[in-house]
Amino acid sequence: MKKRIGFIALQSMLIVAVAATLALSPVLGGRQQVKADTTTTTVPTVSVNGTGKITVKPTIARISFGVFTHNDKSSVAQADNDAIMAKISAALKAAGIKEEDIQTTGYSLQPHYTWDKETQKSTLDGYDMNHSMSVTVRTIKDAGKFVGIVADNGANTVNGISFDVDDDTLEQTKMAALDLAMANARKRADVVAKAAGKTILSVQSVTVNDAGYTSYPVYRAGAASESAVAAAPVEAGSMDIQVSVSVVYLF
Image (cartoon, rainbow, N blue to C red):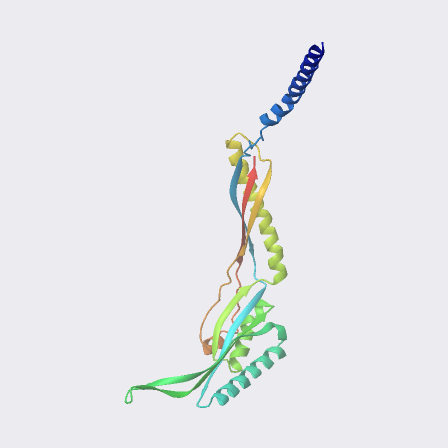
């Protein structure tokens, strides 16, 4: 009787253990079957370039000039040069040029050597002093007059006149050109999307290439000829300011 009771108890324990295993197996099996979904959906894109160009009239002129002096003594060459440049600067200021519009662009004092054929050696032949400057003229029609002023007051190298636009005008023009560049890029993207049977959805990325433009000199000549034509009208012409963009669109 006791053996039968023990057998029944053992049998009951086995049934409970099997039931527990069966109860846990779906959970364990479920965990083993779960897999991460690594599938990604590729969104089609189109990459286009756009350009915007605006033609403007220059608003300022820059005159590049310099003074060259030579002397056996370096101190004298430098002093002579400084005196001439001081005279030119004073004349420019007296004519209405502001101090901040006069800028030194080069300043050098170097020994000058000559080749002696008899000794077959280079010998010191004094010192060369070069001082170059740039003056900004904010009334372009007066540029020729200021060329005459710098030449008449001792400048012996006048490199010419170049034209530019002031900072405010340049910034405003760049923004307008950028707007045109983006419109040009979108127009191109729409053509591509239409051909593919799709519609542009949004912008993924934009790369902007800054404005590019060139200021051209009116003439380049020696101081004497520059002074002679100083009274002639100076024509600034026009200049193109261009901005380009590279845009990636989603469609």
